[in-house]
Length: 112
Length: 113
Image (cartoon, rainbow over all chains, first blue to last red; front, side):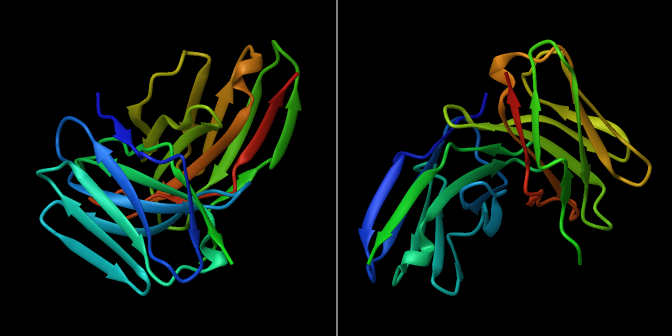
């Protein structure tokens, strides 16, 4: 079955630096990968989606890359702020009405 | 547009009891998925309903069941509760065919004593 691995359970970075989070998947390539943000006690919130034929996607300070050869997606937050502190989840979907599989998440702490 | 709502937000039950959780999706969304989230296991997929039919199912025992109504509202039922069922239960709705972007509710925190 599909496995999604987010290598770091926790990541601490200094305010203003770029945070880079990693998501690796096994088996077959997804139709697209999605990234979500989750704050404590709340449901995840959708941030970005990247399709298998796209190399990069941007939204404001967020950037996602997708490398099907490495079976990996990288999620970047530039000019990080303490308000970016949260858990970030990667999700794999093969489309075709198949279920969405989530990674266990990376807890990001931005230190002022 | 109103978001996904879940009721109740918090629930305390004892072992052996059963529980029903409710989810109202975003208006116009026909797909509703349920997830269990625990600190050790992360987000685990329970099942997905689309137009009142279960379309996908995760690896959970038969004690976990669900249904969807004609107005797309969904309920999830857990019978014979066990201590290990304590978790945050999240409902998500999806509207655009093909991308499966999940719009989550705030969750129901279930504690089994």
